[in-house]
Image (tube, rainbow, N blue to C red; front, side, top):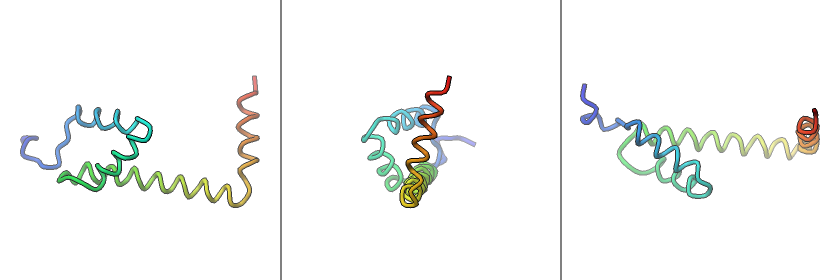
Length: 85
């Protein structure tokens, strides 16, 4: 099977470029949105939609922890771990 005929084929170099761009602050988030909702490649769009869903899950979890008042305990635990020698 030829990769050029598959409209959902994404080369390794394309993935490397997209991963590099998404690692850039601000530009990466914008590009995740662009790649998730534009273009013909369903595989690429689904991957970036999944990234957005994970982002939403993490934001909701942080909001829940902050809402129940657990944030100070988490910060103290992190500080204790960082200063432990």
